[in-house]
Image 1: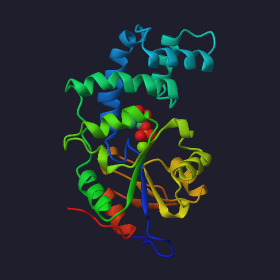
Image 2 (image 1 turned 60 degrees about the horizontal axis):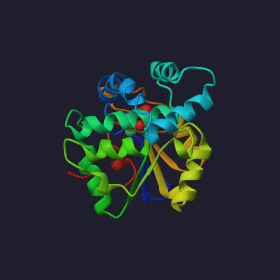
Image 3 (image 1 turned 90 degrees about the horizontal axis):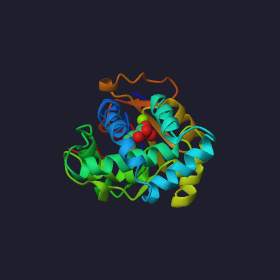
Length: 236
Ligand SMILES: CSCCC(=O)C(=O)COP(=O)(O)O
Ligand SMILES: [Mg+2]
């Protein structure tokens, strides 16, 4: 096990969602199909300002392509683009509020985050899902509303997760020192980008998601294991 030697103990933990705190299967087998089913009805709401903004952004990114067709293409390729992510967030809102969707976080997540928060760490989210979608996921979990654990939610407005400039923009906006921040994600390309921006990083390789552990970064199978690697409290 690689220990956290030579590095400062993190004061901030920035967390990815899919594959880190939430099973990939929940996103791909529950959330994405739900959005795909409800998207056509939503697109018909021309007086909805989010829908109007999504349509305008889609036309800008794919001129000449009908919006519904372009959004389908993006869904087919799991494209991380802001208009699709905004629209998916809007679709899921109704599902969460009506009790059809409940986020099934990994069991170690809430106890570990509570222990980190109690120890004075700042917790924040960085996901390709829109800020609204992130707040819904953590607002409607099997353990209830856990959004108060987080101080900030960052999405694609800060840039793509595989670009180091996005992490620099996040730490600048939040007023954090990069080396104080630990970024947790299942995706090696995201860790590399965060590392380039001076953040500490750890890959969360969940056996349930069959995440392939990388070779260049610290790897943990859960947040609890990451806690032990970085000298943080481990929770219940
Ligand atoms: C937070 S909403 C659900 C996740 C999602 O839409 C997505 O694209 C996954 O993004 P992540 O950056 O959390 O891997
Ligand atoms: Mg992920």
